[in-house]
Length: 211
Ligand SMILES: C[S@@+](CC[C@H](N)C(=O)[O-])C[C@H]1O[C@@H](n2cnc3c(N)ncnc32)[C@H](O)[C@@H]1O
Image (cartoon, rainbow, N blue to C red):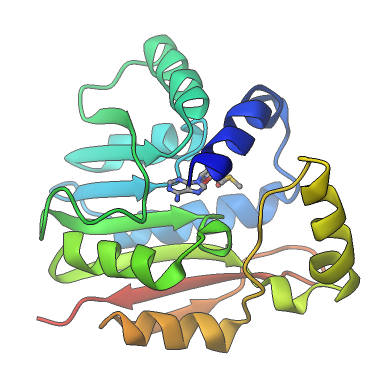
């Protein structure tokens, strides 16, 4: 995991300055997430990056705890928080794949642009399932790397990785994601695509913990 964290530490500042590639799709996803959040909810966001989405969602919930494996990403998120402080929002450096520090503590767990980056997807999803309360929802948006031109995952990314310019990617497709969620005991209740461009490779998936 150290290698992943080092990569994201290195690119954090540049990532913070990048603009969102499909703003319409992003806003669509935020609206959809907003429909699934309530003012009484305790929410965990994993892989929160520089905290931009957490800052947008926090006003609508009771508590939002946002975590990321990269200390630099979290440092930038905290700077943003200082410019826009909210009592209900907190940030912490943490690996999403480690066992849930707080079992059955959250009503919602959010993961945007994260699952395809985990070194062990099943372990990550097991941690999500453990930290959700029964009946709670896991809301994710994930790049289905298997839908990209095969040259990207099989040639370009490995080359860029060797140069330290890309993270490792899981070559997931939508059905693989659904299978992995089911394997961790989560019931998929919605699969959507929110992109405004012709081909959106990111699957927005909502899954419920039974109970
Ligand atoms: C593509 S960025 C997405 C950030 C943010 N969720 C967004 O949508 O803009 C992926 C983020 O996941 C984080 N990450 C990667 N592996 C992780 C892990 N095992 N646990 C927690 N965060 C992780 C990275 O540090 C990075 O901030």
